[in-house]
Image (cartoon, rainbow, N blue to C red; front, side, top):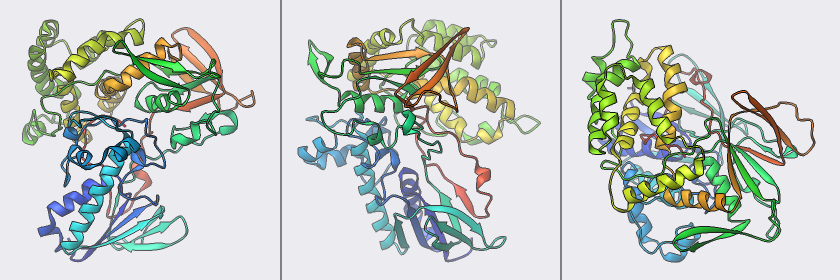
Length: 495
């Protein structure tokens, strides 16, 4: 590495924070090679990230990761929360007397925490001899390669140019779709404020549709529900009471599978590790003569024995017997576990599963197989480049939908909110593949086509929100020497 390099980081959210933490941890070596670190953030708020910024999210939007699950930073999330006064915590949507390291809290609270850790790390890097340059409110829109092996030039949205030797893109979430508010269509829920009634006392007195039934959809549901009614606890159950004037307010989630995510569960090892169940040398030894790591090989040699051990701890005898059969492959496993979670009525299924989930969390009784699945896929994530194309297709079409349904792990509080809204007749879930027409004929509405088997149905909404998540970005868009697309080490759970 050439001495006195200038490193640029685009983005200052969680990915960038963990990169900076790594630079700090390895400062004794890296300070000899990197003299300047420039951090570019398109928002005026640095060190938070889009999902946790007050400019995009709401106090009613919950994070999906606890303090004990977060990779190490100067201070833990739990300890930081304990240092805040009750008034500030209430402002951030944290309304509990006692902070728990295993509990999840609001996105706003996590954002404020990340900001303090970012500041602490930047300060420590400065003291260690790095020159830190921060450019807030500066959106980088292009990167130019001056010459092969030479400097890179970053270009901002206002035309400013910045030179550097290396670039790390840590931009995280990027929503490429375009909102069409004239038709009530929104390509993403963010910022959440665009979906809310314009003024206090105004309501969306109509049915709202969401594409997706996972965490982003729940953010929309929670933010809107808290502005169209109030929640009370009656006989230890959460109840929703709609405000007058919201008789027609309702939300319908559209999900191809018709499934809701699994609920939060307790874990023996909440922090993910790449090589917990197999070491690097063992994994690389599984590569075949063509240089590929096959999904079947990974399942048979790594997943199968570990899952058998997990199901033994969970006393799930049927799964132990099935996995002991070599003919029972990863597709059979996914199908079997999906069926176990598939109910004629997804909300009643959640109500049933809530009993086990509450027992797991409150009595600290881990559900080992769910934890193990998260770990195993986390390991595979770091070696995905070894898989052939056909296994990538199988991974994304078969395994990942199942994994995200398990690993999304909806907090119990969010599950209670969904059930309260369902019981009040204000929430529904419709299975089927959704297609949104490019040409909308009815002014002020978005029409979708729902296909569920042979049945096809056309539905129009005054508001329809795409909550299906971020689409993958192609690295080929950034063919530059010295550039790295970076994702911080995190567990598989989505925002």
